[in-house]
Length: 539
Image (cartoon, rainbow, N blue to C red; front, side, top):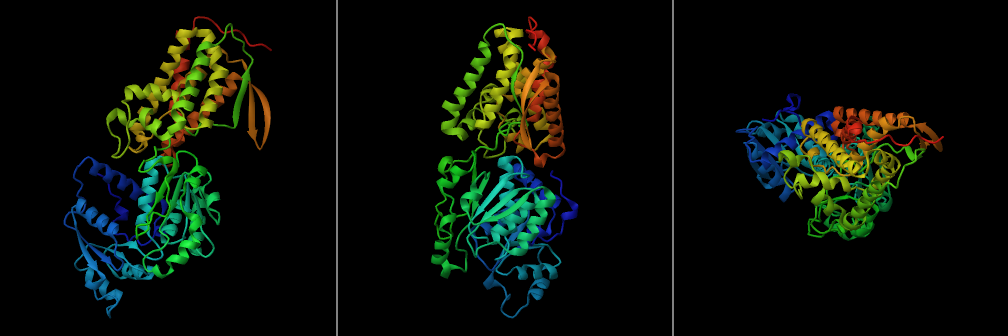
């Protein structure tokens, strides 16, 4: 059975900003657990016999169905209360309504117009009050969207979320929620459609505390640039029908189009809510294809530390490094001819996911070939040009000398085993220390196998010189001993791997434990595979 946060029992949820980051995270964690139990069809009746009153002064299909089904799955029952069913607004005060309903109900959800009405209802009712929507805020929608983003990316911290269109109730709640989790939020709105000033100020303050950012812009293209998630909402909400033509003209440049999707890096996510009259708001899915779900951000796709980039070393080889060159060629060929035409499809088909090992992949997660296949194929797949470029540079500089020491066949076997060792450690850590949604993030890239090469190089040629390009406020070249460069690189992996364990909400994107596993394997087995010493460095 899932654990409940005792300090949250009985709390009102009238706006996102009234809950702190840890409280919101507890709700998302509980939501993940309940979703997984529902996927497994395991009972989770946490609220047996409870009665939820649902006040709808604004009707909604999705809100009614989600709350009514949700309370039923938890063992309770929902009571639909339309505006015509209540005396609210026809002489009976909100306080009187609260006093009556609290005697019969265990909680109240209200979907109405004025935020003040929700706050007043919560003030006078002795049972929890949930805001299903007001003209000012849409907190449950925001939490659901943040839950989806976290499922797909494995984290919220650092994810760039671009909101396009009307700075309405959805924008306000999403902005505050994103700030609470240290996301990089930007809203692109035309003049006169900006989100509420007070909410914007509060969101920026929260973002600073959590290491995120909150920005406003008029330019949708600027907002979409480097966005991990693109989000838009309806342009004409209930009660604004008379303004539909004007709003459509004002917001015409803020639809999610194929052009905007091409400005966002792959794999971009598109979250959108259709016009309640059925218009799709030109929400083209572009590169993702109609009805296709993009793959989660692959582990390893962000690369590692790019502040130190090796250019070359000073160690010659006895012969041409054929296996190293063929491995580079194979990786490039897979990237150019297989992955680039359909990056998301290729990742779904042949990228390794830790959840495959224990069959814990969440519902809806696309799982391709079995893990016995993907554990190998993932070693030849990448998430971006930067990813493959960095990996192949490391393999070229350090692989040729390790191949020279081991011989061609032994080096190839060593390379593959290093990659498998890296995948094994990353999988063990993920399955034991991360959520089942993090376990669904594809692991791909040659960095695990290449880490084994680095570990072997460190023991074979610790005093070799590595010429390094350094980015630190300015660009310069350094020549470092191999033990110093590779030692710094390995310490970086240990540091960030430990941080990822302590702060899993900030993790994802880099498979640090794959790097650690490959490096340790390389150091442990280098002398088992080596048949001769490499040539000494030239000075």
